Length: 248
Length: 274
Ligand SMILES: [Fe+2]
Image (cartoon, rainbow over all chains, first blue to last red; front, side, top):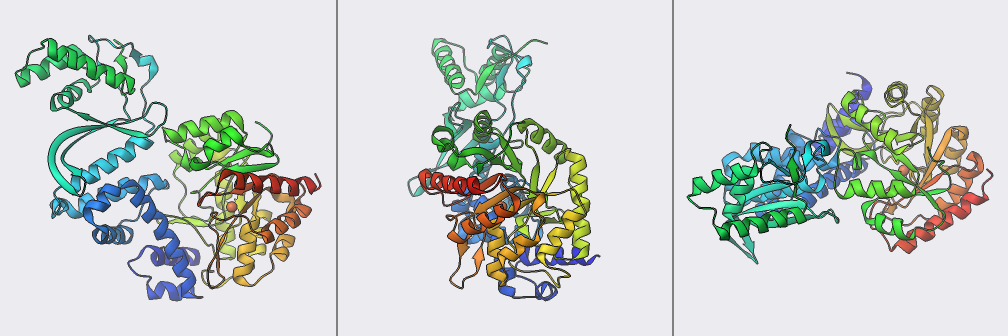
C-alpha cells in the first residue's frame, strides 16, 4: 500500500467509523480536533441529506434508532455513489436489509413510511421520460402512456394529527406540471386496480378495464363510466396520463 | 461558446427565482455543478434550462476528486462530457482534494498530503480527465483543516508542482487561501505571490465561518469578509482581469445582499488591469 493510500484510508476511517480509530489518528498526526472537524463535516452533510429525504422514516423510527442506523450504515456500507441524492435510496436499501422483519416492530407503519419517503424522493428527482415518437393522442383502444416518474404506493396507515390510524389506500405521487413539486393524489381501491392494469405499456385501456371489472364482479354501468372519465381527466390535468402508446 | 467574463454566481435552487427576474446588471454568468443536474428531472432540470437561456455557464465539479486513487467510472465520464458539451463550458474545474476511498464516497473535500506522490496522483488524474472530457481542467485550491502525515513541501509548492507537470489551469479560491493562512498561521499574500498567476482562469470568493476558538471553516454560508475583498484585489493585481465567482451555498440572505456583493466584486474587478 502506498503512503498516499494509507493516509486516505486513515481519513476515511476517522470520518466513517463508529468512533475515530486511535491508530488512524496517530498515522495522520496533528491535532485530533482538526480531524474531528472533517468527521463532523462528512457526517453532517450526509445526515442532513437523509433527514431531508426520509422525514417520515425518521419520525416513525425515532431519532435514536434512525441515528443508530446512520452510524452502522457509514461504518459498514458507506455510500458508493458520487451523487448526494442517491445516498438516501442506498441508506433505505441498507436499512431494509439490515432490519428485515424487525423493521415493522414496534411501529408497523415504519416500512411504508420508508417506502413513501423513497417514492417521493424518486418522483422529485427522476429524469425518466417517454419517447414522444412512441406516443399518440389518448385512445381507449391503445395502451395508456403514464409518466414513468410517477409512483403509486399502497399504504395501510395514516398519520392523523398525533395519532397513526389504520386506513388502507393507494397514494399516487407525481410532479406538479409547472412547479415541479411532488403532489399526492389518493386513489380509491378500484382506481388503484385500474391504474395497475393500465400501466403495463401493452394492454389497451378497454381490455385493462374489462379485466379489472370482471375480476371484481363489477359492471361498466353509467356511474362507473362517469367516475372513470373523471379519473382520466384528473390524471391528464396532472400530466400523469400523457396519452397512449402508438401502435407499432 | 459564450464568452465568460465579469462576475458570476453559483446556480442554487433558492436563488434561481431572483436570478432570473432581478439579477444585477453586473452579474454576467453562472457556475453550475454537473452532479446537481446530471440525470435529474423536475425542478433542477428546469432551473438549468432557464439559467442557460439567460447566462453563459461555467461548470464546477463536486465529485471528481483530483486526488482520488480509483479511476472514475467511464460511464460517468461519458455522461459528464455530454453534459459539459451541452452547456458549452469553456473549462471544467474540480478540487485539489480527494473524496472517495476504495469506492466509498465521503462527499467532502478531503486534504491531500503535500507530497511528491500526491503530485503524481493529481497530475495523472488531470491528464486522464483532459482526455476523457476534451476540455481544459482547472484545479481549485481547497480549505484544509489538518495535514495528513508529514508534508514534503508547502501548499504553494504543491500547487506549483501540479501546474508545472500538467496542463491544468488554476481556479484560485481567494477565500480558501485566506482561511488556510489564518488557520495555519501563514501569509495569504505570500501564498498568492507564489502561485503561477498566468495559469489562473477563474477566481472564487465566498464567506466562511469563524468558531469561538478563531478556527475558520469554509462554509459558503456567510457574507464575504473585508479581508477577502482586499485579498481579491491583490490576487487580481497579479492575474489581471479573470472571471470572479461568488459562492453562496447556505444561509441565503435577501437577494439584495447578494446583489450588493456581486456589485462590489464587479467594482473591484473593473479596477484590475485587463
Ligand atoms: Fe471555491
